[in-house]
Structures are given as structure tokens and as C-alpha cells.
Amino acid sequence: MSSEKKKISLVSDLGEFEFIDRITEKINIKSPDVIKGVGDDAAVINNTKKTIVTTDILTEGVHFNLVYTPLKHLGYKAVVVNLSDIYAMNAIPGQIVVSIAFSGKFSVQAIEEIYDGIKTACEMYNVDLVGGDTSASFTGLTINITAIGQADKNSIVYRNKAQKNDLICVTGNLGAAYMGLQLLERENKIFKENPSMQPQLDGYDYILRRQLKPEARKDVIEKLAQHNILPTSMIDISDGLSSELFHICTQSSVGCTIYEEKIPIDQETATLSEEFHLSPITCALNGGEDYELLFTVPLSQHDAIAELKDISIIGHITDKNEGLQIVTEKGESISLSAQGWKSF
Ligand code: ADP
Ligand code: MG
Image 1 (cartoon, rainbow, N blue to C red):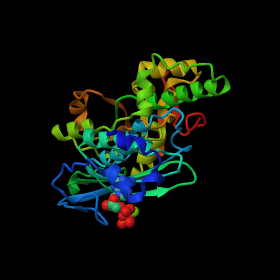
Image 2 (tube, rainbow, N blue to C red):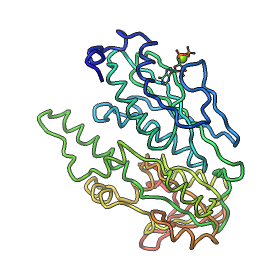
Image 3 (cartoon, rainbow, N blue to C red):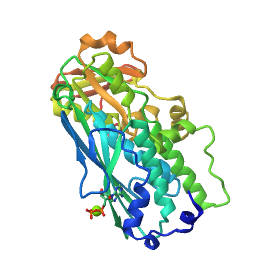
């Protein structure tokens, strides 16, 4: 960045058009499918398959706290949460458009930090930034991203096709992002009450990363395709395992049984949740923002799934009238919608 650019600090000094030029410069379109990216009234995209579209909004004070969220991570996460929804349809994201609204207190450099994160995510996931919109805001920062993907008609996976006896699978581990958030909130509260106290975040790199800079499971979607495994249903875990199982079971008109001992939980999640007097399993079931994938496969795929790393089989699909059940480590069967499991 040249020193001349560094001097300009407020977006209002720059004017809207120069500002848009600034944040969209150095965008290199990677895919030949993008016929027109930033610069016209709308982008033009070539697509021979089915188009998959999703959008997600992140609002300051609701979805993130700028006190402890690095702007670059925020931009990265805003992209990832959208891509996660595209992957959850078993589709491949190709493009994003980014709309951003912010108040006069933001410097050009601050917005550029957010775009740095956005562009880094685009590189990581091989996605093109093809447009957006920019607006002033009186109520804090809002970032809305729309992602566009594609898939063959027959490989799209919905929430509503889980069948009785299917295996229930999850990727990675659960509850980590939630515990990362608890840690950040706790340290923020301590700091606010006593500004001489420095935040104690050592030893929790993994869960902090899961909260601040999550990843979407592109790798899993690719691996399933390589192994010719087509899930019967799939959803990404943004609101906690319980809630996502509920969506799959309701939409598929089935029930499910999962096993507490099979639910993957990282050691940092377990350690910190105990410090917070929370059971790790509650964090896995009800904590949000894991962005792992929850999917079902026919029982006949058991051996193929068991061979894959980082995928856990946690239970199976049952009849609708059996409801949603979790079998505890003691062997008790508890309804997943029972009080205490449903929400904190
Ligand atoms: P319009 O008046 O047609 O909405 P704009 O001046 O808002 O056009 O945008 C001009 C071009 O810059 C468009 O191609 C738009 O997609 C792109 N653009 C505007 N804001 C952003 C942004 N925040 N991020 C990425 N692209 C943007
Ligand atoms: Mg516009």
C-alpha cells in the first residue's frame, strides 16, 4: 500500500465510486464462467448446471462483537458461512456478491481489512467476488453475502430425503465454536469490569479459531464425490446438532437415535466447558456455528464411510413415531426435544 493511500482515512473523504474502486481493485477473476464481474449493473455468469443460491447476513451486535473480532477474520467468516450452505446442498460454490453497510466511524483501511478477509476466503475456496453494494449505516456494521454455486440435478442433496435405517454422520467435532465464544465473552466482561486485567486466552487457540475463523467443509464434499457416496440428506451445523437433526427429521418425516458416546468433541471444548460448568455434550448439541456437515447415508455405505477420516457415525434414522432420541453413556434414552437439551 502506498503512503498516499494510507493518509486517506474516512470513506467520506474518498466518495462512493473511488471507495468501490479501492475495495474491488486487485480482484482477479479465476473462473471462465464469469463473463462479467464487478463494474456493470450486474454480473453475468455462465452456467450449464443447476444454480444454487444462498444468502446470509451478519449484523454487528447480533452476530459479532467488534471488540474482539479481528476485521479480517470477520470478512473471512462472512464468506465461509455462505459457502457452507452451498456445500450442504452438495454443490460447488463459484461466485459471491458482497453488500456492506457501515457508519462514518469506519476508516477505509478498516473496510479494506474486511475485504482482505473476504478475498482470502475467495482464494481458499476458489470462488470469485463478482459484485456487491455499499451503503451508509447509522446502526453499526452489516455485511450481507450471497453465494452462487452449481451442481448436477441428480447430485443435489436436500434435507428431506433421509430414510429409515440410514446412518447419521457428522464431520469434524462439535461445540468448539460455542466454547470459543464463551471464552471471548468471559474475557471481554472481565476486561470491561477491570481494564487492567489482560484477557487470558492462552491454550485455547483451537476453539478461538473455530469461533473467529471457521472453515466450510469443501474437503468433505470433494471426498464424498471421489468415493461416489451420495448422502440421502444433508445440512450444515450452524445452530447446533439438535436443531439440525430436528430439521432433517421433520422434513424427512422420520425419527432418529444418536449416541452420546459417538458425538465427536475436541479436548479443548471438553476442558473449557467443564470450567464453565456446562456438559460438553450440551455444547455439542446446542452450541452453534460449527459449520460442520450433518448427513445421512444408506446403511449399505457403512464401510465406505467408516474408512473416511474426520467423519463420525453417530446414530441412525428411525420411524417418525420414535421421535428424536439420544442414548446417554449410561444407556438411558432421552428425547432430544426434552427440556435442557433443546436450549440453554
Ligand atoms: P449500482 O448503482 O448499479 O448499484 P454501484 O455503484 O453500487 O452500482 O456498483 C458499481 C459496481 O461495483 C457494481 O458492479 C457492483 O456490483 C460493484 N460493487 C459495489 N459495491 C460493492 C462492494 N461493496 N463489494 C463488491 N462490489 C461492489
Ligand atoms: Mg449499488
